[in-house]
Structures are given as C-alpha cells and as structure tokens.
Image (tube, rainbow, N blue to C red; front, side, top):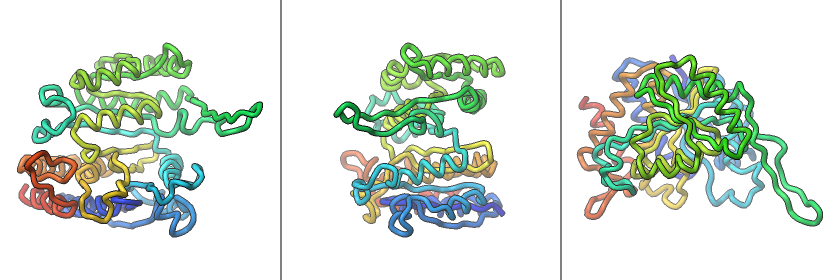
Length: 358
C-alpha cells in the first residue's frame, strides 16, 4: 500500500487536486495499484490554520509518504506579509526538507491545441520538450542574502551559489531523461559573465562522458529564450539552474497554449516525489468551478510514472486527456472564439469517462 499526501493549498488548488485525485483513484483501480490518501494544509491555508506556511508535522507526514500531490499556494490575502512568512515559503521549504532537487517540466502540444498557442500552429505542432530545473540551490537559497541600509541608501543582495555535486546530480537526471527520449540535451547558462555558469559547463561536460549517445549543446540563456519562441521544435531536454529554469519553463508553458496544461514533477534522491501544476492559485476564479484541472491531472500521470513505476497507467491518463481535447472539450483558458467553455468538474468527468472507455 503506497501513501499519497494531497496538499490542496490555496485558490483553485482544492478544485484541481480534487479532480486529479479522482483520476488517480480511477487509474490506480484499473491497474490494481493499492493507494491510500492523506490530506494536509500548506501555504496560505496553513497560515490561516496554524500560523505558518508549513507545519513541522506536515513535513514529517510527507516523509512517510511515497508521493505528494500539490495544488497551488499564495494569493492577495497574504501578499502584505513579510517575505519569509508568506505562503510560497511553505513550497520552498517542503522541496528543501525532502531534498527535491530536480524539477521536471514537460511541455507537450496536444494536436487538438496547436491553434491555442500564442505561436503559429506550424511552429508548435509536434513540440515535446522537457525542462529539467535545479530546484534547491542557486540564487533562491544562496547566502548571504537580505536587505540593509548602507551609507544611507537601501541595499538588497542575493547570492548565486552552486557546488559541483549539486550540478552533477541535476546534470545526470537530465542526461538520463534525454537518453530515454531523442538523445539531445541543451545546457542553458550565462557563462560569458557568471563564474557559476562556468562551473556548470565544466561539470556538465564531465557528466557527459558517461552518456556518449546523448548529443550535448551549451546555449546562452538569452539566446535560448529567443529560440524557444522562434524554433521550439529544436529542443528535446533542457537543463539549467534554479533562476533560469524558473523563467524558461514558464515560457515553454505558453507554447502549449495555456499554463493550465503544464504539469511538473519534483524529484530527489530519497524516492519521494512532489507533483504539481505549474500554474498559480488564480484567486480571481477560485470557487467558481472555472479552473482547468488538466495540468494537475497530467501531474498525476507523472506521479504514476516516476513514483509508482506505473508507466501503463500514466499512458492511460495522458491518452484520456488527449481524447477529451480531441473531442473538443475546453475550459475557459483553452476555449477559442465560438467554443463553449466547461467547468473544472465537468472536465474531470470527461477525463474519467475517457479513461473508463480505454
């Protein structure tokens, strides 16, 4: 029996995780997977309940589970709080506490959604790329950091720090992913001005020796950002640090037509995985049954594949999503002119029906 911890979070988080859990339960049943579920608060919901964005008890609860399914955190209700106590700190902490150093964000254009992308359909058809982002190091965690008054002027600083072990382990994840795909890896960096990126190049080249069948390219982050919108099909797997990965993965998401379509997995060395949609908490539509649950449902497919080793079940979930989109069902973020938008629950119903139909 594998234990799954559901962290609904804030805004539309409870709505999309509800639909994703329904799909996970159905897929598990079809493939004879024995799962049990627990639920806990994170982010703003945790602040409201116990005064902290992530309680110590929830961290321990998470350690005892095989996988975590997260909705979203944050919202204007908590925006005025000090940075160190805001909802997002709960997400950063759970990643750090569980050692979830590798963030995998696939960006796939489903055939039925090629016209929904902000790019021309002929540019995006057939796109299937994966951004591998280092998640627990770099400028988001480096020390020293903070604000001070220096010579009468306000000053703030953040520090980008990586050591060779951190770079090597994320590079290995990326190479292994590329080896199972089209065997092409792009390392994104800023080595023309950053010593940190120069270290990345050295270490990535060292890891590359263990993967002679994977073609490696190094690409400056500014040109990589340009090429993602000019010629996205040239990419297979991209690997980069925390800051660059944060930006580029959202850019890649928009190629798919909506942030509501992009799942993610955060993996570590201890076997625990955290799965979440890339979109935010969207408080403006929370509680209106208007959210798109497909990114969270596709995150469930990643959970099945990476944490449970159930690749056939994962393929069933992805096929069900593709069938639903092919049938013309759209939530508001995907609906074009003249298309009728359906709600979050209805989309979940359609995916469940497609899953049941095989």
